[in-house]
Length: 330
Image (cartoon, rainbow, N blue to C red; front, side, top):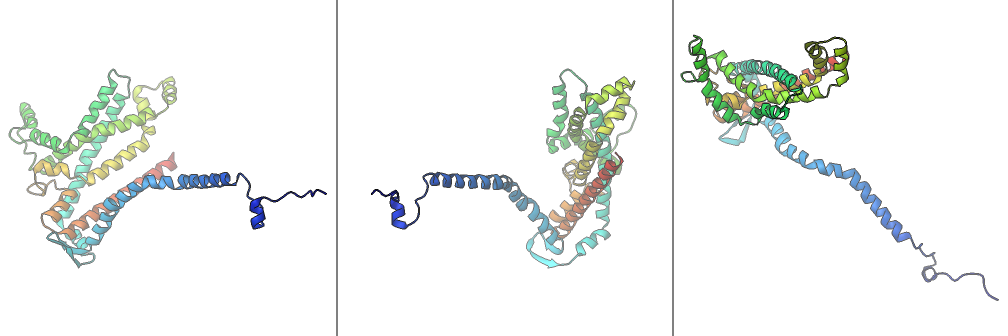
């Protein structure tokens, strides 16, 4: 009599367990592949951005924290490893330091003299470039050329233009009967000269930012305004400017931050860290440079750096409040 029971597989006979299915190794490989895919999808973005955070930690966060620690000590450039704890003394001395307040006042004045005309001119240039012009690409590249120019080269040229005896500006003023102006040694004149360098370098850059924002404005708005009888000027005032409000706010904040950190132009204009014989155009950046690298007081220089950092935070908070108010009103 033949038995109906099938013989077990050899592996099952030896172990007493059923033999694995034929597709188990393939499913195991698929499982490992899917796990690798999930890990890759989850962790790859962090690996891609890790170099930025490593460089930021090394060259951004660590110097910021170390400068904050140094601002609480008396530190000399001759022996930076030796620190003497003074607490907030370096900050309290800034409040009593006339040179610090002079540098802060000069920074504010130069910032206003450079930022307001710069952004107004950039807005006008962007409005002109927004028209359909022949060779528009050439003009857009041309307005960006000053931004690509070295600050040293630009300051050298403007230093010659504003020269007292042989400068071209004084020569032009002499043609209309105005006596030569000693641009570098006057308070307002020197600040105007430094502001002119900043305006020349950054107007084209901001103009292209405004141009990009203008080209993003829907054409339907202009067509509707034209059907209502609005002129070009009225379209600019009632359509373009309201649409550019966030961009204008952005450029104001960025230009203000740049003015707070102004360093290269005033240093190269007069060739001195004092900002003139009477400190008439010494900015906060120049005063920090003078305290740290000429007076060898790294603790005081660190306190100035943190004061500038706090000013920038205040500017950022003001930007946030203004943007929030504008969003509520619109």
